[in-house]
Length: 225
Image 1: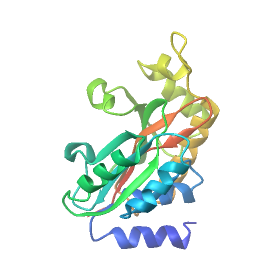
Image 2: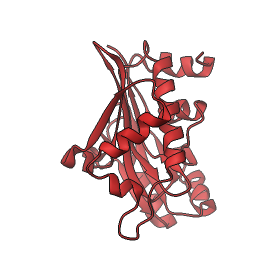
Image 3: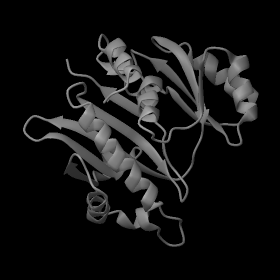
Image 4: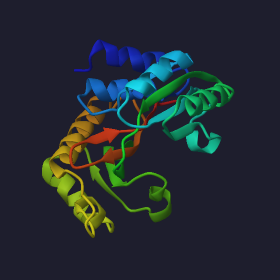
């Protein structure tokens, strides 16, 4: 059953029709899925402290109910390594429409995939998997299965992709840890089944996969009207 915290997140988001990224990631974490370490703040000092403690560059994002597609508003900045860069970008992001907070998180690099779900009128929740990032719109290389999924379903989805060699490793490039990816997609499908009556769609894009992790770098959940 859904925990009370999950229900609270969904309830408080109904008026806007979608769940903001920090809350969507909190739902993913409650399901035991991997998200980057992050801080949600408007304080440069707090964000700078997070940057200095991080072992990798960070990403800064504007959190706004008026910005559904962040790339269209230049609301995401990657590869921040210095305090000066962080300060200037935070100041710019805070001027974007409706910006309530800045999400600053660890930057993970690897193979980008998309994992999504939609409530189909006829079949119920269906799961989408494919190559992620902006490439998903260009190549349209995705696989769809009805939820809930079993491990064999995940393997079948990967095998059906034209870009399956990217997942398995290609020309010396490290591939994705299939055990971790399978665990993520199976658990995500269970999460979607449990939320079937509360959500319209879920978009995890990108999920960044390495040999060690599959990290949900961005998450958006749309709610029924």
